[in-house]
Length: 292
Image (cartoon, rainbow, N blue to C red; front, side, top):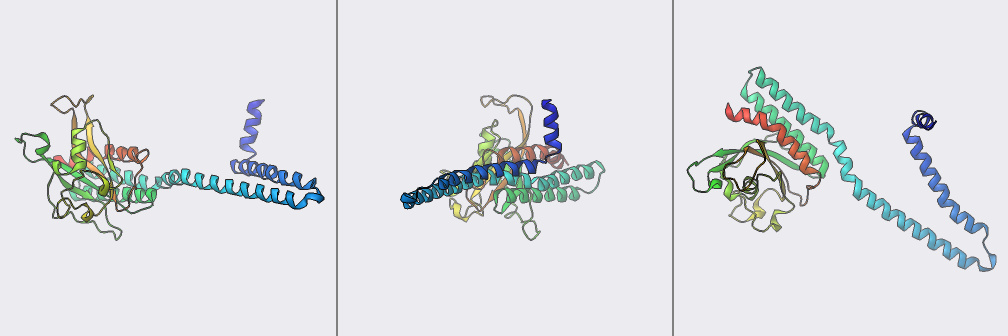
């Protein structure tokens, strides 16, 4: 019998109708309080009772405003994740097409163009989620000096691909230079800590010891074209990674970077997994590009 009425409610009463019915019941209840109060009003003390009624209405409206502000603060960003699904689908769609081009032995530049499109879709998704303009790029990890004494001095990063600007043009890399990871806090941190799945900074100007090779003059972080940044490693794990072992047990090939001029743009609770999923998706196709 219980299942029967449950089926009736789910089929006869649409979800939107039940929500409106709940709201209507709440309104009737709230209006019933002042109605009952005014019904038995004492004419001899009418002014005092009206004042009490006014206080009640003001307190109720104030509480309602507080609840609405809290709910907006609580749910507005979560709702944006749902709106960004179409952009995320477009990004994965472009990665799928890149694999198709690879399997059909077509032009290598076509693969890069499709991945660039994917980065653009992902930048649009993050821009929608955060409410500010975001950029996305892939930094390729290259072994530059295998004989260096310190492991972090052996590797450099180079911009492999970058999302397009608002005008549809791909932003050129600064002089197309190779940057040592030891001079870049984000890449160095992820290289030294293989169990970490992200590097995130809300405001680089307030981050003690933050380094970037492209600050001019060196150490002048205000010259950089971003304030908040989130970076994920693009890699494949081969087992449980221990920081005490000398030999790495993962194949770290690149970094996925998202940044913005806005401060505190990224959410460590939700955005981390969103970017980590995309970084894992990029690993095999970036691996093919590096080997070709």
